[in-house]
Image 1: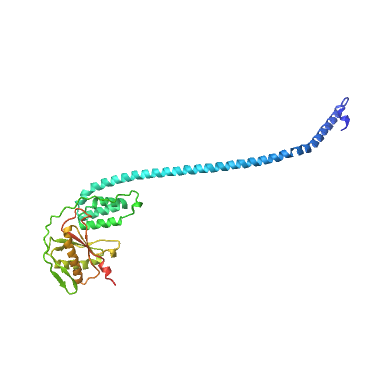
Image 2: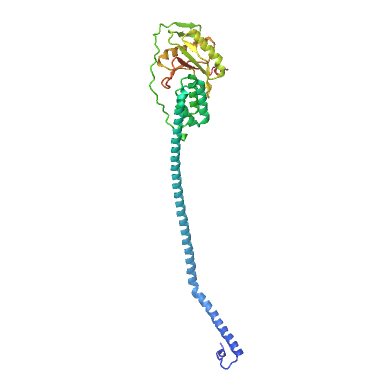
Length: 332
């Protein structure tokens, strides 16, 4: 560097300015010489700094992932707890609704039961139709069991049993399952006098089965039930033939009962009191013989069933005869 740039005594302003520029230029040259050295000295530090930055990024990322997992688990646990609490609350509310519904159904059934028992059969069936149209299947079944189970008329009882069969459901699917239990008092002993049967007199007619004919006890009214409207004429002939053979049986109008599967209906006699069993079995023989004499096939043997242990307050002097689907079974 020229020595003259430091000798400033006796110089004018222009000369001093020129010397200042030269000095600044010399400082700039010095800085340029120092820069490569500084770069070489800072290379290890730069490498360590980059590694430190990368490590810090990994640590931060890991922490974020961990926080995300923990937050997700906490949220899932909170959701499960909330759902369990909601289920418990819903079950409690459902039990309360079932209690309220059961109380209202019991009050309604209790208020209608006495009037139902005293109604005419047609009015009783109308009441059951109103119940079926107004309530859900489960509630309608409970109302009918509570009000109509004591029906005395055989036609009404047939409608009642049919309604219960159609309303039958799986208790596991009911929102408010009920106990399928009905308490009843013991059956009162019948006061009808039982006469000792005389010697049986066989009655034979050609190839048709013989019928034993004991002495007539108290007369029984036959309540015929058919499952097909077309069977009325054939059943009327059979019952009239029975009445001609035995004077201890009378007949009431034939009742048409609608069932889901008419072909599944079996020939059956239902009697109400134990002492009616001999007459019920004799009636089965008479019916079979009458059908044979009228040339009507498809009846088969009548089953004789006692139903007094299932229903209370059954009227005396009646017996039910359920005919199978005669017209269907005789078709080719």
